[in-house]
Length: 585
Image 1 (cartoon, rainbow, N blue to C red):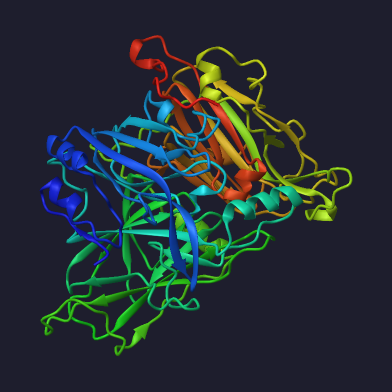
Image 2 (spheres, rainbow, N blue to C red):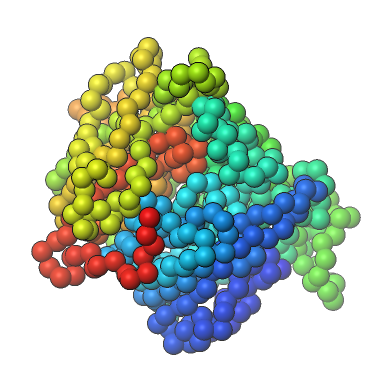
């Protein structure tokens, strides 16, 4: 229950996903799996009534499922998803973490790589998985629709290629989310209008269920039955809108083996930190004998800023199958329940220690191809700021202003034409400028006393990179309106986290400590609270690639920018023309 076995047949793997995971494979997708080449899916975007916390509301879903269906593929497969929009909202889907090599038209962020799919229209996302294996996820990438519009992407190794760790008995997707009783489109609309913080969520969820710590939710608790002595691969996905999360299983230690679909040197952990937009695979070794007890699995926020946040805890249940029982169904309420101890909400020391333990596998089969030399260096500040309140309006931001957020003090202005289309057809004028600053225009003591003027500038400015440019980027948190952690996600690329630290980055001394041997490879990294992080990547994928904070309210306030990577000289280094069904603005 809540998991799928992992036999050799790919067809069986797909068919036995449980109803908890909510996988729905159409017949043509199953046939394609037998061919081992193309995986076809149909996503019908439709409304569905869902009840949580004794409250029923209509939510936006894929195929009526919450969370949505799982995309299952192998490394090297082509994935084709026909998305049909039956709701009144404009929709796009982003395949979070998929490299999208020369398939930027399928990346999905609204007004960046495509115009939204309007009501009554459709779009076919077509991309190939290249050199990736592990856990990713898909989600809506417009407004706050990803609250309920999300699901897992499970990428298996090529047929015949084993995992670089023990083969698990079962594999279990564990998707963390957030639930609002209110309509989240109203929540974000009101926040942007009044300039204040949005209303916080009413609950966190695990696989769409809030768990028995919340009112009226004992029956809505994710439960996992395990067999003594067996190993389980938990595929963790943080799809929560506005929160990084601590996660722990009472009286159990897991082994971390992969993050963001990239293998890592295995290490044991009692508690994990998974930032918004991150994924993580961990091996759970069940106890060798029936323990005559049940164990709570719990998650709650890692929150370092001064703003409001949902400080509740989501719980699920781990129970062992009793070998003396003839039935594996049902979960006993008579057994003692053990509860894990989670770090404090603002435990920055734990966060630094956990992320510092992540290292790439860095073997001959799975090398860490870290750029050893750098063509372009960038230094980006990330943080909050303010906009003046419009005349004749009352605003609820700091001192009567409106909240904003920035990269290098520029708050991203969403265009009305998709950036990738404007670039491909050389129609830049009036859409964007190639002038995003490589360094802050007005340096200050970034983590010290903030400047008196907290106003930000606005623009649609991009960094332009020649093909195959090796990039080093340092991202620095700032104290403007208070320091806090920011999980930054880069579309179209993986990068290597070569360094991180507290306080202000020192370009004279800190690079000497960079790890250029086995740094962790990711697509989403937390900029530490009051600190900095340094990444490197090779710009070998032509297109326009969004980079933004995965705290959704920070994205809504403008904490984002984009990289424009030019075509290379060879045919396989150029972005192909757009598909004929690309949505129009």
